[in-house]
Image 1 (cartoon, one colour):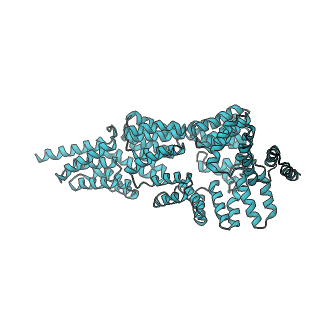
Image 2 (cartoon, rainbow, N blue to C red; image 1 turned 90 degrees about the vertical axis):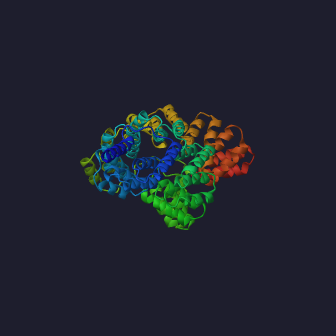
Image 3 (tube, rainbow, N blue to C red; image 1 turned 180 degrees about the vertical axis):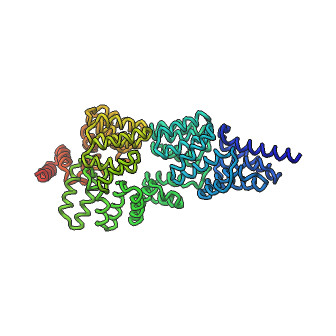
Length: 615
């Protein structure tokens, strides 16, 4: 009798363990899981030796994201007599959910695991290695997990996340599509699909997928938060707040909630509220570049130059090529009276031929403050042209020969190949750069950056047809500015102005928050004298960046003047002139508007100044 009860219990435990492994039932919505948890807790309270309900309770807690509850349930089952070899992966999962990744791996390695749970153990190991950034170990673990649990939808969602972390967009897409095929109501799979669609096709295209994810589980906090971020980028702030408030009822202490609200506050120029919200994240997001950047902006706006500089420095330590961070650091140093620091921060920007006029103007002021008049005059002259030169690859610090030798030895290692490609381009050896980039692309066809790298090499070598082809492939994987603007540039250089314009408008449609898309679309509208469209595009840019761009202000003035509205045009060109008092084109247009107002002397003075500058 006792022997039969023992084996019946063992079989029930095995069935419970396998029930969440391969061929698992569809994921249940949160409210269903909460009700099941309450039922199981009642069953356990009346039977302290029950094992099976405790194992199921651990599974439910894991599904609810409750690592502490899962740990308690697993330990309760072990205390009631369950075998460690059967529950070791569940205990490791509970530790991993609490952020105790080293302890999770130690648990997996601490003893034997029954064959039925090998797949789950590998799955947990894959998640931990992925969180640790060890992509090689994660790949091995997920391969083993998929071999053991080939039809587990939740596992395939994690495989999709792993492939996405590897920048393998096609692989991630295939994995999440298979997860949805296995379980069409899997909210996590639908939400991750939405994330991928947002990257590949744009913000608007992702919204239906978020709706599907929330229809499957209205309390999917991750989907709500990602949906809120997307709605915010689309400018739908009311809808964004609705999603955030719902998420706050589920995960009230999630730092992403405070961060997104801080973004919203900053966009509304309420920087004190933004600072307060950022502080409520309790340091949990301090290592994320977007958080560092927003913190630097907020502190600079509130007069905390030293703190803003600290955040910008931290971001530059992670991303030395982040020019926005360099501009913030320079502005903070300048406001704090450190002209030397401002120049030092801006040098990597202003030394490039494609330096922006804002950076050049600040560098000019800092150089003048240091008594370097010739350098200041040079920066002012470059800024006054309002024309940016051609972008060049980032300089490489190592010897060209050493870089090429390292890349030749390991041509498919991006860490070796990419610096060599940049060095080849800088050396004028574009054919060699194209060859390296082609090999890297062929080995990583699902990676957008691999196609972009080939496009950059082809563009540098004048191979516009190849550049267009590469950038199109990149845009099919990533609909963001990075690929779309490169494609538009390559098409224009190839003589396809219409195709270039279409690429810009497609970016504007897929990414309505793109300042670059609105700016370029505005110029396109100006070229064909569609004044109202141009004004709409440029006003959207101005609403985001303020009256700090002389070109935007000049073009708005031109559009309003073309419509016969001088009252609107005059203050706009006046602002542009104050920003760029040495630009002859702005002065001449300003003078024309003043002439129409019968302010002949002021117009003549401006024309005289423009003529002197032109000598």
